Length: 108
Image (tube, rainbow, N blue to C red; front, side, top):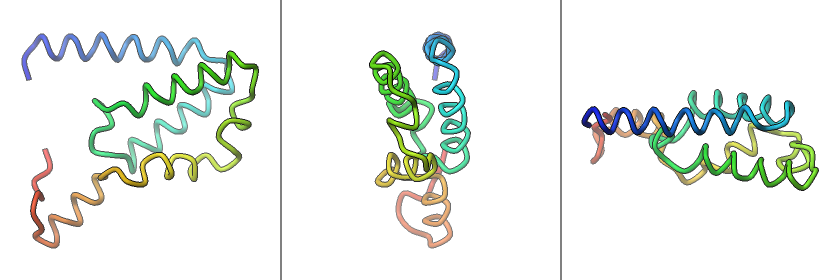
C-alpha cells in the first residue's frame, strides 16, 4: 500500500464520516452502535468493503422518506447487524481456521 492509497483512503473515510454526521440524531446513534459492533465481530473486509457506506445509503434513504431508524431495521439492532454479515468471513472465523490449521489461515 503506497502513500497515495493511504491518502485516498483517508479522504474516503472523511467523506463517509461527514455523511454520517449529516444523518438525523437517532440514525447517527444507531449507526455508531452498529459500527462499534462491526468493529468487534465484523467482517474482515469491513474497512475497505461496501458494508458501512451501504448502511449510510440505506439510512439516508430512510431519513429522506421520513421514517424512524428503528422502523427500518427493527428493535434488535444486533440481529439486524448479524443478518448483514451472516455470510461474510469474520476475524473470529479466520482465527478459528488458524487454530484448526485450515487453508487460508494467514490473517493480515
